[in-house]
Image (spheres, rainbow, N blue to C red):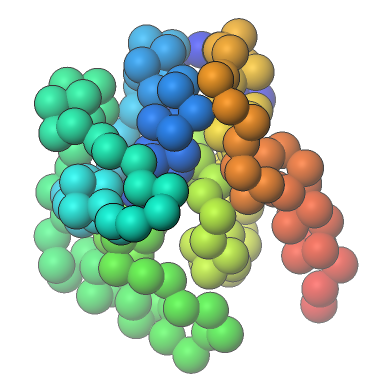
Length: 166
């Protein structure tokens, strides 16, 4: 169970959702947040258009530890998952390549099925945590409801489906 002060790795989508629901600062005060350079770049580049959430560079840089991941580690991770039926995108690939080396960390569940399938492949799905569960553990209120993919129910359903697969 995640406790306040716990170490959590976040992908770019989770960082953006935390900003959208206005719980980012509270999360940063309650937990030890980590990400990787590629996810930071994805967050700051953002997807412009309807529903765009602006994230300021200082807000990100001052509240989360950003790790540089050596390319050889990303390549090794890519070779391990080669041939699987899921395709982890660049930021999540870098994040998982780094975070899977940290046995004391949790992985924040984002909306991406591929990253969850990768955690399942490495038998680490039990280390995934929803944004909703993080807020509950830190007694954090949000300004808006989370999108479905950031809820405990979504993650629980994903875990259940994958436990039933051979």
